[in-house]
Image (cartoon, rainbow, N blue to C red; front, top):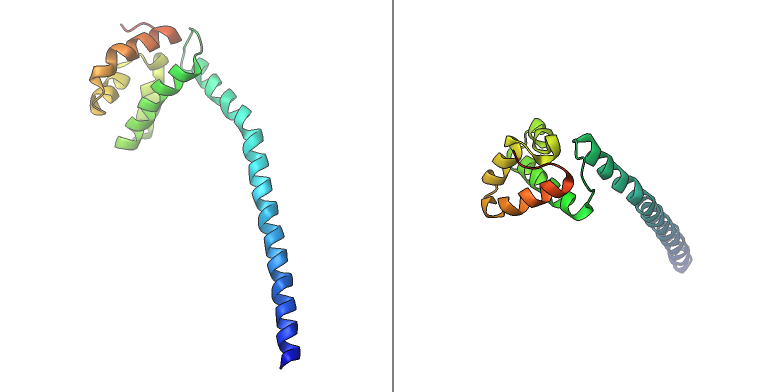
Length: 124
């Protein structure tokens, strides 16, 4: 019986070590992918800046805040077209204004107007 117990313990410890090494390797791979994905993500956001016809200064902080309004609006209504329409014409459109209203952010509309102006479009 002791012989089986020792064999079981050896197999258990070997399997445990193999599992531990496999998990550590997977964690390392995921971390490496995240490190290399960050610049691509930033470039994707920056290309979106130009795709939605922003012709002003790219300010990452401002862009992300306005983009967040559209993201939150999409989360609220779950309408895929709304997400794109909200960003159209550098956030200067009736869909963005409607999202601001739906999200109860009207008090911040003046601030959003300033930010849209920085990005390159004035409110019509």
